[in-house]
Length: 190
Image 1 (tube, rainbow, N blue to C red):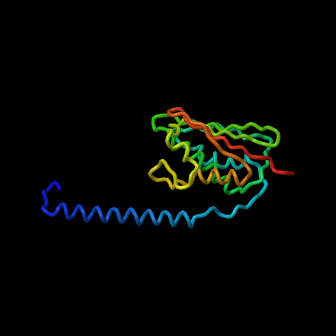
Image 2: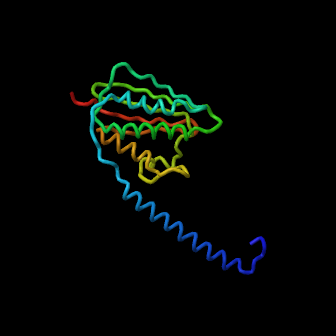
Image 3: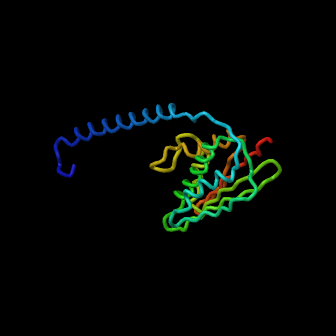
């Protein structure tokens, strides 16, 4: 275009057509990948929820400019869930919190809990950017992402993992102030 090529219009049209075909091809590949990549079989096991959270915290606690506040309780809370799914669930939540924090802000993630009868309510609270209004309804949908490098499976996986364990997940968010994820899980039967 800058060189005033007389064949620019033809070349541009050919490039545009090729570009659209490539996008359609990638979209098809993504759809096939999504259909193929179903959740692995759930293997239920009884274990201490606090140990799994601590495993995720240890991995992410070394990040620069980011602090995680989490005290491992002395008394265990035994749940019946898939251990690997729960670990991936907490890895996703922690990774998202770190990525949601602006570079110029000291990141802070606070993990806390309340036990009420035979249930636990975990809170995973960050001080990141928050979730924009138009995205809140879709946040747990598969293939939805706000990141250029994301697959959109992270929070869908979190929801699926928590529900497989008989629990529920939801969130509250405030733009510029952060997001809190709530995870409610039942105590395993004795």
